[in-house]
Length: 395
Ligand SMILES: C[S@@+](CC[C@H](N)C(=O)[O-])C[C@H]1O[C@@H](n2cnc3c(N)ncnc32)[C@H](O)[C@@H]1O
Image 1 (tube, rainbow, N blue to C red):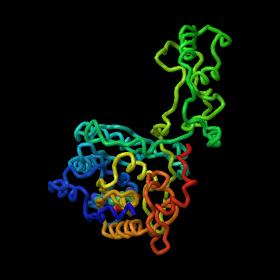
Image 2 (cartoon, protein in one colour; image 1 turned 180 degrees about the horizontal axis):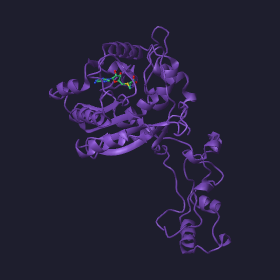
Image 3 (tube, rainbow, N blue to C red; image 1 turned 90 degrees about the vertical axis):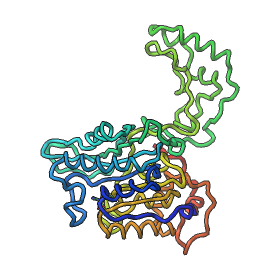
Image 4 (cartoon, rainbow, N blue to C red; image 1 turned 135 degrees about the vertical axis):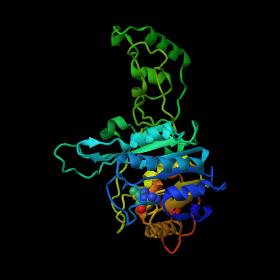
């Protein structure tokens, strides 16, 4: 089982500022982590325990909160590999009518004073967001996932998180039947392509459509049946052809083929929230969100750090995807919960739903299945028995 390749999780209790400082003093820890993934407490929202002096989120002002977080994430930078990255899942806070812009103020500080490169502010869209009772404000239906890298180049693997389907036409975005998919061009006709290109390039915006080649003609010339479907975007191939140019963009091809391994995911991720997990009342992040980041930003055997570990979601996904994990939390009871949750994941005592969500994101189907542990489902055995349920994600 993949988890067997990882060392046991390193769970550390204490204030992250202090624990991280200690780790950064250890030459074996500096430069060890490919990823830091975390969701810090919101500013001024809730209490996780009785330690009001050290608990993050209980500072007197939003500026103090941002300064404190910045200090923590700057310490994390020391621990990252040169190609490592930091992912912070966080929402904003409203005070009276005003949004405090906490995520972006933090990002700015990390770039200006912390040496980070700001790569992306992914929107985590929560379709099942909590409705709002406000008479003036919109319901808050997203959080930011701030993606910052230690240096300009960071380790990324888009191939593990590519998607299929046409996001723009959700309702009609059904997976076409296999016999209507075409994976390769058949006998593209170079001379015909050259002829069609010339006609289209020489046409003016006033040229009537009747003087231009049909989209199906263009598609055939490139070796694709216009009525067959693209296995990446699920659109018919005649929809890949451009017969009339808008403006003077002559460098664009008149027929574009999608990447056969899938499209780059967009920077809005629609993932349902998970308010409670059993009896644990945590603002936890969903496992599939963490799995997507882990697959994109690290390889098996890498070390991953979460300085606000909570119930250990990052550690659980690390256990399921063969990454090593270090987690920090202020409260001993959270450490205990996280330890148990991660042990359950390592030993195969996790529920099918969790396996399913991680499976959607993780590339573990290739591995051979281990013998089932105490009749509990294991990630690989579940996947192998249910392979057909996990085609590439339809969006
Ligand atoms: C939003 S929760 C994290 C939940 C986590 N992502 C999960 O999935 O369970 C924030 C966590 O930060 C912890 N925390 C707050 N202040 C801290 C500090 N100074 N040092 C370490 N952990 C702290 C809280 O105890 C809480 O567990």
